[in-house]
Image 1 (cartoon, rainbow, N blue to C red):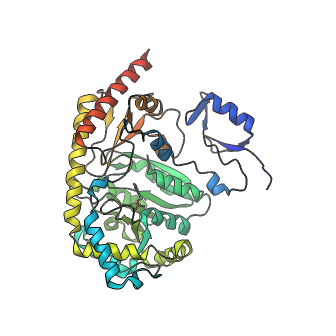
Image 2: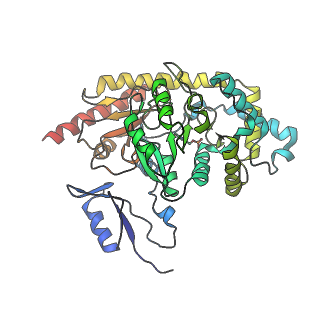
Image 3: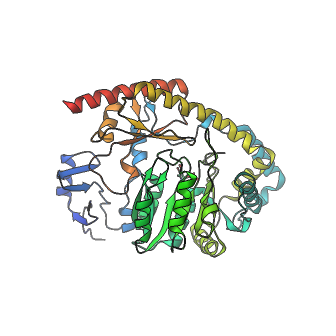
Length: 448
Ligand SMILES: Cc1ncc(COP(=O)(O)O)c(C=O)c1O
C-alpha cells in the first residue's frame, strides 16, 4: 500500500496537517518534550502518528499510553516511584484464591472450562446485585448487570454502542487517561469540564451539555483518577438537575468507591438520575486486577445493545475466573478484606499528606483525598510538571506529570499525580522529601 505521509501533526485548533519525515526530524530537534512551542500563539500538540498508512485513522490518531512510557523510566530500583497506578500486591488474597481455584477444579472442571453466556455467570451477577442493595441501598436486578473484562471493557462497549465519529463526550478536566484514550479511538469530540474540589464546574457543564450530539458524560465521582477528588452530594444533585431530560447518558465509573478512609459516603448518581445513569464497577481494586473482572449496570434497552457489542468483542468474559471469583466471594468476607486494604492505604495516604506538609513549598497546593489511590498536586502557575519530572528522575523520584490527563494541549501543565497505594510510609517520607527539595531547587532556578 502506498505511503501518503510520514506523520500528522495536530494543531491546537484541531486541524491535522500531514508532514514528511524531514519536517518531522526538524520538529523533533526543536524539542523532545510533549509540546512544541512554535511561537506564542501557536501550539503544536506533539502527536506523531503512525508512519504507515495501512493503519486505520482510529488507531493512528491515538497517542501511545504516556504513563507506560514514563513507567519505563521509573523502573530503576533506586527510584522511589509515585508514578504507578497499581493496587498493592502485598494485599492480594493469594491463599484464599488458591483454595477457591482448587475447589472450582474439584467441583466441575468441565463446566468451568467450557464456553459460557455473554451476560456473565448468574451467581456473580446476583452477588453484585446483593452488594448494591446492602452497601449502597440500590435495587439493581441481575438482568441489568453485564460482566465485562475489567471495567475498561465496559467503557469500550459503551463507546462502541453509543458513539459515531464526532459525537461529543463530556469528560472531567483533568480526566482518567484510559477513558481519554478509549473515546479517542471512537473519534469522539471531547467537552472537558473543570473538576473543582467539590465536583464539576456547573456553569461549564450547563454549556457543555447543551452542545449538539453530546451523547455521553463520563465521571469518576469517588476518589477520582487522577485527582483523588470526590463530588459532594450537593454537586451531584446539581449535575443531575442540569442533565435531567437531556438526550445523553451519564457514566459513573466507580473502581475506587469501596476504598474510603475518612469522611462520609456520597450517593450514587443512580439515586439522583436513575433513567440516565450507567454504572461501571470492578473487582480490580478490591480483589485482584489480573482477573479482569468488571461489570456494567444499564437499563434493559441499553443492555440489549451492550450484549451484542460484547458478543462481537469476546463472546464472554473468562468463565473459569468468574467461577473462581464467586467461590472466593461466597467463602470469604469481602468487606473484611477491603478493611485490610483501607487500613494500609489510609495510613499511606495520611503519611503522604503529612510529608507534603513538611517538605513542599507553601505555594504548592494538593488535594486531600478521602479514599482511593491518588493525590493531585498543583505547582505555581508557569512551572512545568514535565520539566520538573526530568529533574526529579535525576534525583531518583518519579510521578506522573499532569499533561496526559487533559484532552487538549496546554502550553505549560503545572499539575502532577502522586500514587500512595504501592509505597510504604517510610519510603513515602523519603520520596516526598526528595521531591520537595527538587521542587524548591527547580523553582529557584526558574526565578533566575
Ligand atoms: C477510573 C478508572 N476506571 C477504570 C479503570 C480500569 O479498571 P479495570 O481494571 O476494572 O479495567 C481504572 C484503572 O485504573 C481507573 O482508574
